[in-house]
Amino acid sequence: MKKALLLFSFSLAIMICHAQGPAVTSWLQNTTETGSYYMEGNSTAMDNEILYNCQKVEYSTDFVYVTTKGIPAYPTGPFLDGNPSQASDQDAIYKMPLLPVENTGNAIATNPGNIGVFINGVSLFDYRDGVAWNPNTGALCGGPGNPTCPGGPAAQQDWNRDAIPAEMAGFDCSKAHPAMGNYHHHQNPSAFKLDLDVVSDICNLYDADGLYAIDATQHSPLIGFAYDGFPIYGAYGNKNADGTGGIVRIQSSYQLKNITTRPNGPDVDLVVTAGGPNGGMQTLSLGYFREDYEYVAHPGEEDYLDEHNGRFCVTPEYPNGTYAYFATVDENWNSAYPYVVGPTFYGEAEDRKVNNINETTTVYDGTTSLSKIEFEQINITIFPNPTADLIAIQINDLADEDFQVELFDMNGKLVKQSQINKGSTIAYFDTETMYGGTYVVKISSEQYSTSKKVVITK
View 1: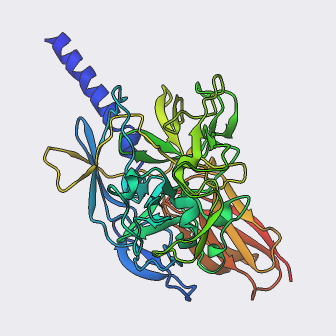
View 2: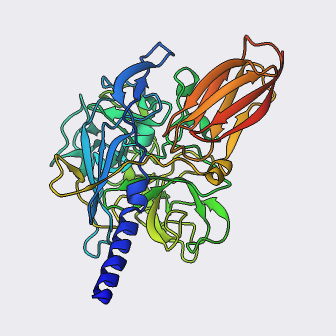
View 3: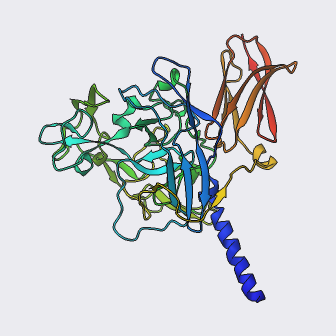
C-alpha cells in the first residue's frame, strides 16, 4: 500500500511539475485593463475598450487552453497602406499541447493565417501575404483588386509574395497589422524604433514599443508558441545548444539565391503596380518573394538554425533542453527570413483555435509577484541621460508584471507618472517644459522599487 501511495505521489508530482511548465506559466494575463489604437493623423492613442493580453489560462493533463481577445498592451495602428481594418476582439481559445512532439512524417507546411500565438495572445502569421505572381497576365494576383491566380489560391503559385517587404507601409510601430480585424505579427515583435537601423518612420508620430526589446547581452525571452506547441524565443540565445558559448544573435540559415532571372516569374527588379490595399508602385527586387531564398546548412555552427528556423537547445525556461524557434533578425536587428517559423513546422502542427473546452481543467491564475531577487535582476535602461526634452524608461526583460514609473524632483515632489503594462517595454516622460536639474525616476512593482537619477538640461 505504501509503495502504491509513493508511486501515486511521485506520478502526481511529475504531472503538477509538467502542467506548471512554461507552456502554462508564460502567458501574460489581464482581466481589467483595455488596449488602445491610433487613427491616422492623431498622435494620441484612443481606448479601444477591449481587454488586452490573455484573459484566462487553464490546463489539463495534455493541453493548455488560452482565452484571449488578441489585443496587445501596446497601441495598435495606424495602418497607412489603405488597410480598412482595426485590431478587433478575436474572442479566441487556443488549445496548445503540453508535450509537443517532432513530426517524423512529411513536413507540414505553414499556411496563410495563424501559425502560432504570442504570450500576449496576439496572432503569429507566416511569411506570406496571400499574393503571388500570375505568369499568364504578368501581374500580381490573389490580393484585393488583383486578378485571380491561375490554378487556385496564391499559396499554390511558384512565386509567393513575402509580407515583410511588400506590406512594410502597412505595419504599425510594433511591426504588425490586422487581417479582417485579426491583429498579427509576421516577424520579430519589437518596435521599428528599437532596431539598430530604423527602416520605418511610423513610430515618429504613432509611438508604441512591441512585445519585447532586443538585448544583445542576454538570452531573449520566451515570446510565444507555434501551432506545433514548441516555444518561440526572441533574437538572441546561447551560441551553443548546450547553453554555453555566451550570448549571440541566433541566425537564419536561409539566404538570397544568386539569381538574375526567376523561371516562370517576374524579372528581378521589375517595377509593377502592386494593386490591392498596398497600392502604388513596387520593385520586385530579390527578397520580394519567398522563392528568392534558399536554405543552406551550416554544419557545426550551432547558432545557425535548421530549415524550420529552430534548433534543439537549452534555454532559461527549459534547462533540460527543448526544440525552439527563434525570431530571426540581421545584424541591424531588421527582420530576417523566415522571420519566426517556417516554411515548415518541426513538430506535429494543426489549427489550435477551438470553440470550447470539453474536458476538466485547472485554472492557472498567474498572479505570482516577482521575488526581490527577480526584481533586482531586471535590466532597466533610462535614456538619454542627460536629456533636454524626453526621457525613455525601458525594461529590457519582458515584463510579466505591471510597473509604475514616477518622476520626482529633488524635494520629493511627484512631477510625472506613467506605467509599463505587462507585455510592454517602455514608458516616456516629456520633459521639454520642465526646469533643468536633477530628478529621480522610481520604478515600482507590486512589492519592490528601485530609483535612478536623471539630469534634465536647459
